[in-house]
Length: 279
Image (cartoon, rainbow, N blue to C red; front, side):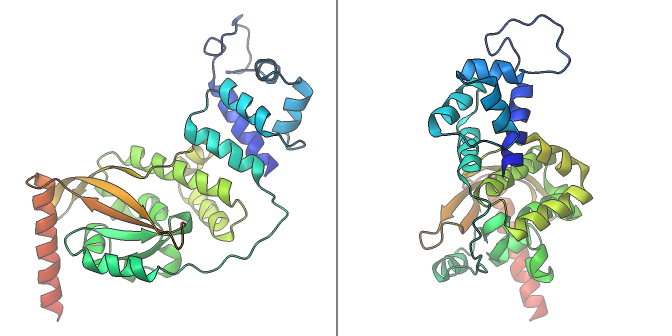
């Protein structure tokens, strides 16, 4: 855990210019960003104390973490990530149960006949979906359970990857959200396996994972180009299950009368026709 914290602190201070931190720049810096001594000075702690933090040999209390978040200009998600990293005890194992979709979310999925939706669990594993959700992205049922993961699909499935009109933006957002998962449970074997696989298979993932960007998004817009439904600007939002906060239902909608709304209706009709054809 100390390595994660140290890497995050180093990545953030190297991105912060002396001018942004209110410090003079003599133009003779060998590396970009702030020096350790400068971060320590601005945070009102000793250089030795800060060095030990980056090296994972010291834990910081809340006042120091607040000071570092201020000095490094961390946004709210990055600040939360810093506190998550600092508050974990890597030596205390805890049981990890297999996630199964909550019954109430399953019923809600079944009722959303005109809205693509799916349920994400830990590490963005796809726990359940409705027919229109599968028609929009991919036939999740044909995938082995270990490969039903949203971040994995965005990086490794050519069909899903090609649908995003701005794939890099979407992919980087996925990595940032997965980074937050890493702060909550860095020793999760599922997470370690997923990150290891994607780091080997995709150099962009490997590079962006090393940037230590973090984000928590509960709503947004996906710009997709679907082979049947055409161009779709879909608003997505999340519903977190109270019985298991690690499960979220993701629903994608379009404004009535919009081209995307018509596209979803076309996709739903195509999906129904396909079902009748195989029945």
